[in-house]
Length: 379
Image (cartoon, rainbow, N blue to C red):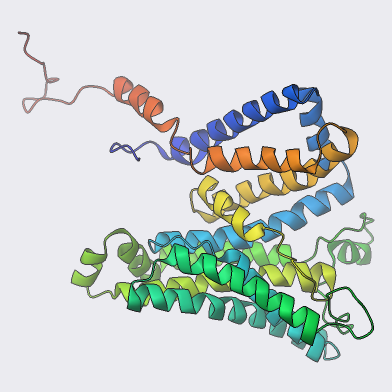
């Protein structure tokens, strides 16, 4: 529960997330010690696995790009008073849209195919978010329940399509044929090579720039436009929104459309940027991680960039730990990631009360009407 007094911005957006992260890492260290390994050695391995080499940095930024898209999707819905946990399904359908463009139009010029693929990913993701949004706005269905259900429906739909419709003939693996030669987001290593800079190959591609542009656009939309004001008003106080002439139902649907479009862009990074074909389960849980990314980033694009980088490092660095520390397998790495999610999500306000109390003690007493500090009479 939020404290009634407002904390300084540097505490709200800086100190509290750092304290939550440190608590999660401390408890993770206890778990690592129980498993018979050194927490400090594990931390160094994770840092080296995430940032110790050029290809490691590329993978970390690649994963972070996925988390930026899904974190932004959660944040936009949050400002409308909604909890969109359907990012996984919306990313699935966004990938389907981008993949269909890659399959059907891969021979077209690159400057046509890539914008078309991005637009298709956003449109398919937004379309998948529309039905839960409409049910919430017009029928009162709870957005959490409907988006969870649509995650399962999206997974089943993609399995059916890849097994029975889009599968590459003559193979057993549930995936499509490769996209056309022009349906690939340029890799960062290739772009740097054209400038004479050698960089180790990795899945990192220009979708990362698209994600950063999306952060800027979300900041402008939410905080600098009348639409963003209407969405935030409807999210905080629907009654006040109606009094101001704002339709909460319309704000709900529009915010969810933007949210779904952002989640759908994950398919651009994964499929057009890395896989170059439609494969099964390509979101790999990024839609759910986006919830923790948004919460830790306080639903602000700048905070989401930082928290997405953290979770990208956890994903990439965790693989290094599982290779070099045999007692800590991939499941234990998932446990560590889960602890970070718990402390930065469900327990995000754990340190708020004591810090608010410290600020209350440090705050000077309120002045009396005559100008002198108010004095409490003794009994």
